[in-house]
Length: 378
Image (cartoon, rainbow, N blue to C red; front, side, top):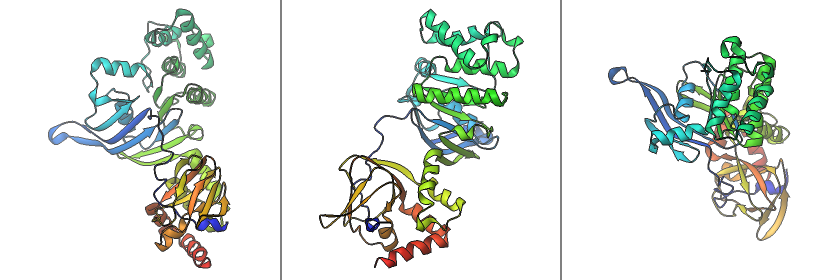
C-alpha cells in the first residue's frame, strides 16, 4: 500500500454521493400486530428497508418470520399500523381507497395462490391486467402473447386454468404480473411449483424487468436456485430483518480485501463479515473525501476511480482501485493527517467506526496486522 494510505477522513464528504432519486420502496420503523386485546401478537419489529429502481431483492427466512406480512404491507394489501411505508414516492398511510387502487396498478403481484379466473383463457387472464393500463388492442395482444411465449406457454395461450398444470398456472400468473412492465414487482414463492428450466426462465424474465424497465423486484423464496441471480439478499427471522446484503458489492469488496496484507489472515467468514458492513459512496470530481485535521470516523476502500492524497498543500500520492485509507485515525484517535480529493468521479466502500472496531474485536490477527502497520509508520 502506498504512503497515502495513512491519509484520514473528516466529515466533509459524509453525505457526498447520496442518491438523489427516491427509492421505489422506503420502509421506516415498521411494526405490525395480529389480533387484539390479550390476543394481540406482534409479528414485525421496527423494520426498515429501501429498494431502488432496477434491483432484484430476494428475501429469505424461516416460515412465520413475517416475510409475507411485510410483502403485503408494501403492496398496500394491509393497512400500516405503526411506522411508515412509502411506495413510488407516496406515503401509504396518507392515501384513501381510490388512491391505494392506483398505487396497486403500478405493482405486479405474484403470490402462492395464483388466483386466475377459471372462466378465462391464459391469454385472457393476462389481458385483464393489460386492460388496466389502457393499452391499445394491438399492443395488448402483442405483449400478452409475447410474455406467455417467453414463459414457455405459447402452446397454452387459449387454454383455461383447469386444463393447465400447477406450474403452468403459476407461469400465467407471473405473465399477468409482468405484462404492464410494473415499477414494482412483489412475488411470494413464485417458483415453488416450477421445475429447474421454468425457474431459470422466470428469473431471467424478472432480471430483464429490472435491467430494461427499471423495475424493482422484491421476492420471498426458499428456493436457493434463485439466490445466485439476486442483486441483494435480505434475511428475516422472528419479525426482524437480521441482515441486508448487496451481493455484488459484498463479493467485490472481498475480492479487493483478500490480497491486501492487512486482511490476508482473515478467514472467509471474517472477510465476509467486514464486507457486509461496508456501504458504497460516490464522490464527484474534485470533491473532498476527507480533510486534514478533522476527526476520523470512517475507513475507506477505493472501488473505482482515483483520489489524490494531499498533505501541507502538496500531493503525496495517488490511490486507485483496491487501495484503502482512513485506518490510522481509527486506531490512534488522532485527527486526520491528510486531505483526500477525488480526481475524477470515484466510488468507495466505507466502514464506519463502530463496525471497524467490531471487526477488530472479531479477529486478533486483523487487529495485530493493523497495529503493526500503524507502528511501522511512526
